[in-house]
Image 1: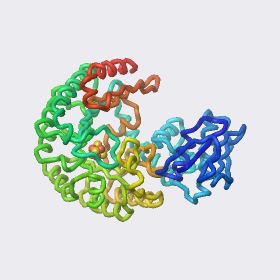
Image 2: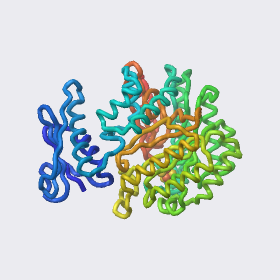
Image 3: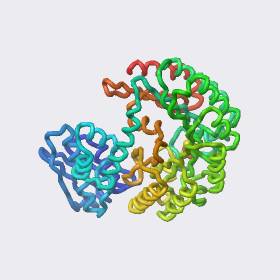
Image 4: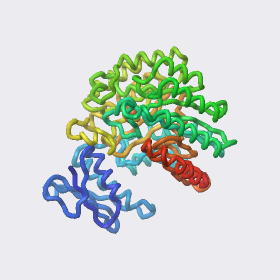
Length: 479
Ligand code: SF4
């Protein structure tokens, strides 16, 4: 548990996330007075500089400060973060590779700097000087920004993407915070959910008639939780309502190997799905068992082979680093096994302890991976990606992520996940169908993003269906 208190400013989130970099996976408590027990970090804004002070058991241990850049409207906020960074890096002896950056999209910041006239080298230097980022990560942000730009340049005015959510899974994984309902309890409602979902897809298509649909992404949950008949029904409806000839990418996040069958793969192929995701998360059986995935490593390999046999040429695999009780050597083993399979893209996440997950509830029962070990894991995965001929093309970071790390999508040239980039960069309207889906309406002229949420509960979604449609219609008026 870490206490923090704040004087003369309101940047609570900046202080907490700044502390979180150095003391991940613990509880952070805002207090008004220095605590008599444990660590308290105090952040104070003075006229020309910001100060960070560390107290242990109520006694002052160390302090540091950073000058406010008065030419920037973010000067105080940056100085608050920098002072905390400088204090805690010295006190912990840990110099995180992403420096003081805690934002979700470092590549977007890099892109904005380059758009404003910075050269690549100047952008790298800015990241290193202002945010204490290592050269390696600064270059990663620039590389990803350029790869994203290649895809974003395909955007034409009026383009949209569509997200379709299937919020069911066979069981709930330990770390899951998504909208996901276990099939053993919800199988009876799947057909009526599909009725509504298909109705929503039709409604969306009528709203955006005449516009190009750039990408269609069926995610979840686990879309392949649907049985063969249900999956065919959904994909047939997509084909009947969307002209797939125009669509640049059609993805189904098949996800868990225990839901994928030869028949489902054939159905997906028949209805024009080009890109699928088969997500092992780890190739270590002991971890799969621990996180509640109820399938074997062999299942992953078999399903992958089956997908290739059916003719899928664009297969993504998701991996999660820092899963409970894994070491860097476990990650190396996972990477070695994935390399043998040779997917076209690989997305490497770092475990985030989310509020809605079982992991958060059962926090005390698990020993979470330490930051230095995670750095090793990230470096192993980056090296293996390179060996596999995959280069970074998108990246995002999450709040509550162990340490201060990134999730990176790597791919072979030409296999960039278009939807992944669009959802991350928020430069295109994305309309979501299904429980828990978020529609993001982008207004290019105003550089404005308006969100419309679908409710998360299945029954609620079906019961308040008309309201969901109305919300979308209203949100689209902001384009
Ligand atoms: S497969 Fe994904 S959506 Fe389903 S329970 Fe596991 S983490 Fe959640």
